[in-house]
Image: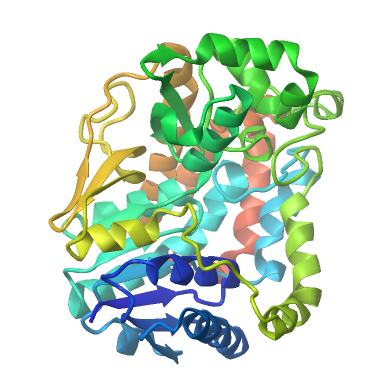
Amino acid sequence: MAKTVFIGAGSLGFTRGLVRDLLTFPTMRDAEIVLVDVNKERLSMARQMVEKIVALGSYPARITATLDRREALKDADAVCVTILCGSTDVWQHDILIPKKYGVDINIGDTRGPSGIFRALRTIPEMLAICRDVEELCPNAVLLNYTNPMAMLCHAMQRAYPHLQITGLCHSVQGTAHMLAQWVNVPYEELQYTSAGINHLSWYVRLEHRGQDLYPRLRKAVMTNKKIYNQEQVRNEMFLALGYYVTESSGHNSEYNWWFRKRPGLIRQYCTTGTGWNPGHHAYILNVYRRREKTWKKEVREWLAKESPISLARGNEYAASIMHAYLGGEPFEFNGNVPNTGLVTNLPAGCCVEVPVIATRKGFEAIHVGALPPQCAALTALNATIEMMAVEAHFSGDAEMVYRAICNDPLTAAVLSLAEIRKMTAELFRRHRAWLPQFKRVNL
């Protein structure tokens, strides 16, 4: 009987989808599924939802829920992490404080000043999870879905290089589905290689039956207004750089110098995008605020439905990775792993998102080579900033945090060095209670 632990099971959308997926595999139909969260009410809701999925599929799986992470992790085969450190009242300042200084943020969970401070609050908890895994289930695969993906995985993989750790994001396969529709190719026949860093990875190969699809994609973006308007930011990046980036326009508008530095540019280029409106300041913060008022009602309605979820397997990687690790067929996915020469023009040791093969032996990352130079320039800068932020955590050096934010493309396009220092100092003051690794902050 396989044992899978979900840490942060109160992230209800992830939990129900991932559990649904893993139960579709013969290696996990009878799994022991252990749900862990620090919020007792959300944990109870998660358990009810998972038990409903088990009942709908008549699976022989066993479900337990606990507030005790260490109890849950004993002898686990796989661990999925979907945590959030701090309530909305805490992380809202990652977005609101930069706005005071003129840095307009749409989502703020990956990089830039908001992503860096989210990482600095979250890394200690992720390393605590790794310590427990090392002691209680050292042979388990640890699959992280928590953002900021690259910084968290880099910290974990640096501190615990012997553990089987990777980070998973649905942007690679999600965007591939979108591009297949745009060029009128069945997704199953799309051939691609994606490489870079999380949320800033590039389809360095995009083919159908050996034919390069980029000319067809360029024509579609340039001539079809509906397609162009679906992803204005990403389509502008594609037309300029020649390769398509994996994550949505809302995210990518924050990772460069081009779109969010002036209100007029936001109005021109950030009006549409998949999943959310990239032009809205604090879009995701407002979504979370609304969910705080509605999530209980939505869960009760979900539980009341006779068939609230399709039992067909979805597109997330986690269950297929678990199946491969438990002895099923090998599975290729895009994962976040240390750069051991895998992408030759990104910093050595940074966290890269590249093709990885999961087998019973663990993870084997695939060498990709060099990114196109016009893509590598932006990607390498962001990777370097991420490494600086992680180094700041381990050294407790607040000045290093400031220097990382100094180099953030969007921040540097808007603020002077003195203004960045003042903003960074204010973020430190606001989050002091969540940053025990910084003994002294003198900015």
